[in-house]
Image (cartoon, rainbow, N blue to C red; front, side):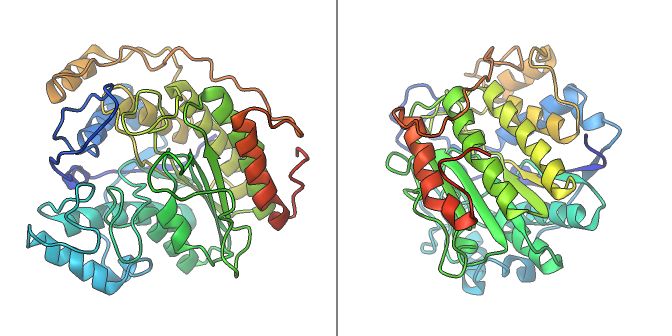
Length: 408
């Protein structure tokens, strides 16, 4: 189902390393040692190694593309010049403060501007390839840094590469771009960037902001005065697993995408919704996440002539989750999903043990879950997940000409 696919990669992506800071975690299930920053680039190294060992990167339709760092003109599509200059200044001054920098979430590290700009350049390159037709699908697993705001860093994100890529698509002539964010955290930075722009539909599936950073993404956040219905937020209760998550996903996302009629689909595929992720409280399996990738792939072909731009995002199960989830994602993007029962190569397991000595590497590409789901039924809202579905549908569906009480 996929034609030419661009896998955007540069070893320089591993330089986006927020270093070692002390963070408090109430969960005891983390693979990380106290003192590690959650956004460890080892997750990218292990993802690309696993995808390579399973042959995903060698497929006939997949081409590796190396990006250039984004220049100021590209960054200024989304970020203030003053903020960009501040990031540059911080790179030369380890005691720099302000603009959300040098906090536990966003510590300053050597090369902070150049490493962040390279990630943006990667996602922007993917956008240009998809829009020009050089690739039908393009993916940057290092991207998806969706929390960064116009004038400050936030939530491990220095620059907002998905927002810059969407702005680039608009500059190139796109009239309608849909952004679907399945990270466990609300895609607040992308929503903020296009809050009043009717050309961009932002859809975010996330854990309830009552219980998780960044504290936004309520159903009644539906877009600014100039773009009513352009923001869609599905806020799910802690503990939601595959069945409820996929029920909510299918009860909302295909309807709003169909109503909007996008020319390009942009997906942020953070995998921190997994049950063992240390920073959140949803309960998805790798199998459930894999099912969401397949659905978005199908929608890209159904609605966007196959134009699909894909990024990574959050994900802090550095060995158990991220490499498997995003290898499945890469396999889906390249048009040949891996069988769930695929065995994880022993050579990869050994690499994982070397890189993360305290980890227990997975032996299979499945969690053994069925990823089945019960379709939402209009009028039912006794279950907390169904209440969340109905809240979103009632808030935004009328603004898009849809009936919140009717399927289809």
